[in-house]
Length: 387
Image (cartoon, rainbow, N blue to C red):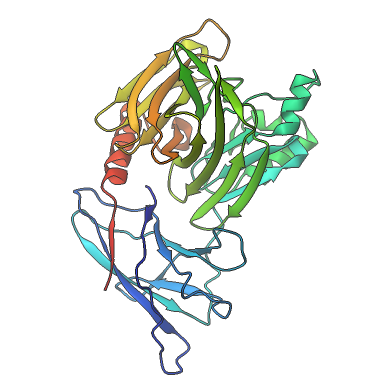
């Protein structure tokens, strides 16, 4: 349920004497904890192998069967940098996986992990996988709000789109909204957008606390889509320098969402402060808040219309500091915050939701169990070694 990065050392191409498939490398992936692991993404640095002539890399498991993989050009220079795949590893065991260069591409994998800029709905940026969907808001929406134009949005909060189907819905919902404004606020059998953000932090938006007050940025100013595919979508959002009671804050969000996960990964590049606070909105100051400082997560479980919804934030131990249930008389400014340390200029955390109607989680306890298990996995990453 989390991506694991392999810092690859000495990846070498082994020639195969004219065969159509060429062996690149064999890897051992080890699970060191008593939890079955799946939907965790291994990243393999292939920059030394994936040259222009290499059009397709395949990943074979220890049964010699091909599994879904994805190649990513992380810096958008036209060359492949990283190969992604998701191993399935039982508790306290390991499995071997082989990477080959193949002449035949498997086109069966569906692009479940998708994101894009949405100019037709002002200037949203939206992303999704097979379980959840999100969006946030751009500079045109901000200017409309500041100029008093109807339909504007001034918020750096993260909106949750409550989908309950596996297939992608972003394009479908926006198209439906083009035909009839507000159509995605009604459930047509796939889910809906009934999650109010306003100026709140929504699901994982950040703030900076100075004394007893919280300060936050406005809408993103630019975006860059990195990849979409069967395993991951990722993109970058930049923000104008913003003021936190005299502290000038520089912020860039690197966001990714992997197949099978309910939580997006946020890697925040931040300058000007030593700590940020990632928040979960407390709609109408209702619902149940929970926190587990040992497992580094916070959670909010609430009744939302005719169902229930859990939102959460999880981080690795080195980032998690404390939490704060901040209650404000101002509309949408009550949030449950996780205080997160800035380490070497960045903060990494995971944030998302579980909607009861999606049938992923039946109740608050199942949602919190998910957050606890997620924390154990990111704090005990899969061990990947070259054989």
